[in-house]
Amino acid sequence: MTRVGNEFRIDTACHVERLTLLLDDRFVDRDAPVRVLAGERELVARRVPRTVDALAASLVGYGDPALMFCAELEVIAPDSVAEMEQRNLTTAALAVLPSGRVPQLRAELEAALATYGAADAK
Image (cartoon, rainbow, N blue to C red):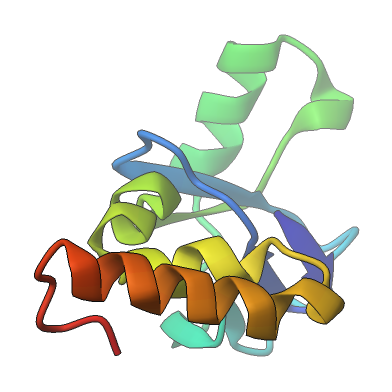
């Protein structure tokens, strides 16, 4: 996960159903909306209220007043592996290759798919 200001971007989430962001005024503007994205897809964008429950839970959980968080935001995380498995094989394979090899590999994959009867190769 990466963060810039109040925007959090989930880069990869493998076999994670949900995640909880622990928020604090030290590193986010708690009076502005918090945005969470997975790739370019916005999962949530809203203000997250400060709560005594969040403060108490973080103090009990970490036992350190310096690690107290005033708000929590639970997000349903898209499973990157599951999403990748749903993608077209050609697209997934081409995404990790150096650009110089893409045209050659595309031709090889299309020929192989045509040989083995894959109708939806494109």
